[in-house]
Amino acid sequence: MKFFVDTADIDAIAELNDLGMVDGVTTNPSLILKSGRDILEVTKEICDLVEGPVSAEVVALKSDEMIAEGRKLAEIADNITVKVPLTWDGLKTCKVLSSEGKKVNVTLCFSANQALLAAKAGATFISPFIGRLDDMNLDGMELIADIREIYDNYLFDTEILAASIRTVNHVSDAAKIGADVITAPPAVIKKLAEHPLTDKGLDAFMKDWEKTGQKIL
Image (cartoon, rainbow, N blue to C red; front, top):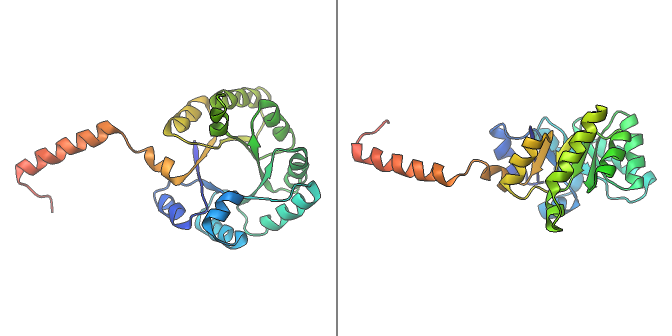
């Protein structure tokens, strides 16, 4: 499974990238706002930092404008993936940009039918939003499983990018179902290393080591 980091925070990306934990980055207008940076400037810096796909989202709502924005964003770097919403205009944009050889991430997916349309339009990635479905007492993982089954049935190349990841269980569940990618905030990725029994065991080891009176260095 590939790990994408869902942030526009350069320092956070760099820390995880140094550990080999970054296969790509996803951003959106909310994350750009949080960064306080110019979208073109911060996106270029991210693209220079990581080798994998960097999703940069269009903000227009009509296909003609989306296409123009997507082409502009794609000029930032070779590893840009243009992110478009799963609307009819977004699908039109996906078809045009993917036909031009550009990578496209179709976002805000909440149904298997939407995912099917995105794959037909040539999407590189489909981003089903797990956490937001869970917020509505729906099963986000069931959507991932449905998309996986459909894509496997017809050998679609579109990769399932599990988004709106809120917990470490979301990550492991998505991995078991067969999502190709997860995108998560840096804090969630870091929590994957945590377990209370690890902490307990380390504490016991350190107490016993102190009793030996020894040093390694």
